[in-house]
Amino acid sequence: MRDSVTVHFNAPPARVWELVSDVTRIGEFSPETFEAKWVGGASSPAVGARFRGHVKRNGRGPVYWTTCRATECVAGERFTFDVLGPGDRVLNTWSYRLATAGNGTDVTESFALADNLGLRLCWALAGWARGRTNRAGMRRTLESMKAIVEAG
Picture 1 (cartoon, rainbow, N blue to C red):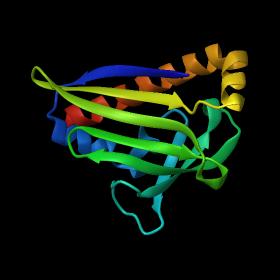
Picture 2 (picture 1 turned 120 degrees about the vertical axis):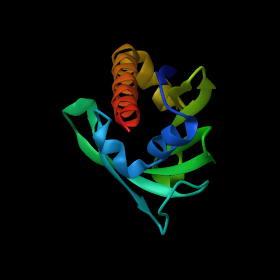
Picture 3 (picture 1 turned 120 degrees about the horizontal axis):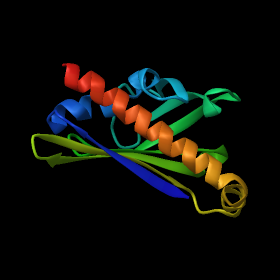
């Protein structure tokens, strides 16, 4: 119910951070989330800031909005947010971790589903397919970000 992908970027953490923490640009990179916007007065990443993501599940549908809340924001190091369900119940946690490596930055994108009976059952039935989709999506997202960052 969790996984991660790491990609090396030939750029310093500060430049990578600008991109991974700008949720309004996720539509340029993600195969599922095609737009996002800050809500509730937020306009930049900060702990507690909320944003809404517009998702096209599996790149085909269904299409829906999710509400997310930033839980970690350390410039140049990490950006983490929870995907929220009814009553602000955490359904999933996504994270970008940045680590200086050689001449650039290793960026790790990860997800961790909340540990509840409904999600455990869903994962037991179709987790192999969803896990494969998430892993491919994380790799595509990071590779797309890498191309933008390295192009300057």
